[in-house]
Amino acid sequence: MTNPTPAQVQRQGATAYTVHEPRNGQAPKRTFLLGHALGCDHTMWDALTQHLAAENRVVCYDQFGHGASDTPTGHYTMAQLADEAAALIEALQLGPVVWVGLSMGGMVGQELALRHPDKVSALVLANTTTHYPFEARQGWDTRIATIREQGLQAIVDMAMTRWFHDAFRAAQPEVVAHWRAKVLGCNTAGYIACCEAIRDVETLDRLHRIQVPALVIAGELDLGTPPAMARAIAGQISGAQLVVLPEASHLSVLEQPQAFIQTVDAWLQALK
Image 1 (cartoon, one colour):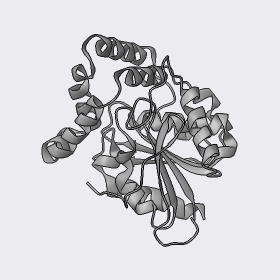
Image 2 (tube, helix red, strand yellow):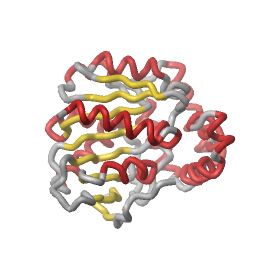
Image 3 (tube, one colour):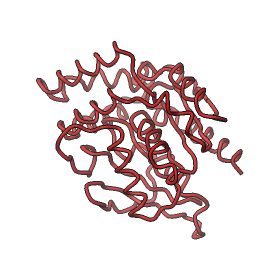
């Protein structure tokens, strides 16, 4: 696993974050803010961070209940999570950022661009969705109930089968074990609260209001947020580009890090 240049974990209110300044010593070409998936933390972006930080400022942060961030009590909504991201952008004086989010991070990014359009200059939305149909919402309810009764241990292996496809799990068991431990290290109440926010996500009918460039990435093998969900997003944001990564399941940035980086690079080049 590629590690970026070490950056000290800092705090802004309840949120833990890291800042990677450009390694070339120049003023940042762009500023990126990276939002991770449910059950992960900011280190899921290590390979992308290492790449982007050559000439950009890259800020990564931990969602509530994850990593080194706190776990505010109560239910979470996607609007609340987006407002927290906006507060971080404001507090750090980042200016409009290129938001890169995967799964839950992609949902937060959509809501951030809708609620705080002045805070976002471009969007990368990977392995994510705008809403869940009734049956899937029931599935989230079942997961939440299971965690409440039995803890994260009861759902972690199921999560690994959805995050990583069979061939990847067989070839890189150490990576799977690493991220399995990350899930088990989450604050249970925070994980459940984030599940509730994800279950209730609803942005499809508002996405047409987003006016910034957008890259939508899907994993060919993703069962949780399949390519059809990505196509729905790309179809609602004017000018959005859709890329489906072969041999990638839900955590595409971990399964196919180079393909993910190359896809982002090509899209950024086209923004010039």
